Length: 203
Image (cartoon, rainbow, N blue to C red; front, side, top):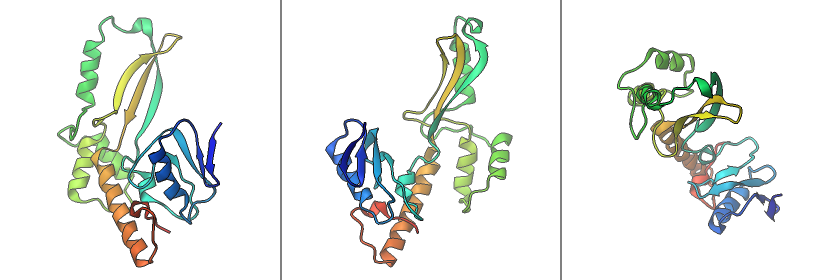
């Protein structure tokens, strides 16, 4: 059951006080509809608390969208059973590592047809710079660094799964930073004072 910190903030789990203090700033925004909720993994972020749910009405808070937009996980069950896997998985893992580069700034070193087709059919609402487009295309289908991973797993029924945790690479941070900056300028023009400038929002 959640703990109600006040009428605008609910908390699940044991959360550090500085994280709760940050979330309170978001909860006090006039655009928040209902209450802010902190999940058990909540921790300090830029403006918005990571691991929070911030329901807004007719507004977007770029820092709540986050610097790793698109970060997420997927698990896909394959038709391969555990007894069909080779005894030594190292060759398979080497193939995966070759096909899916990982690490800070790592990419394919070239633009694949799949990347061009994907980005071509999903034009961003704003034009990316030539450098951002090139980086996006070269890093399409890669992992990045940190806590992102790709693994082969087996469930209790002996079925094989591919589990992926990927992010938006550096482009997510660039886009978030750009939009946070624009929202701050909007707040300044509208003479809106915020408890944390990084909670600037668009209406």
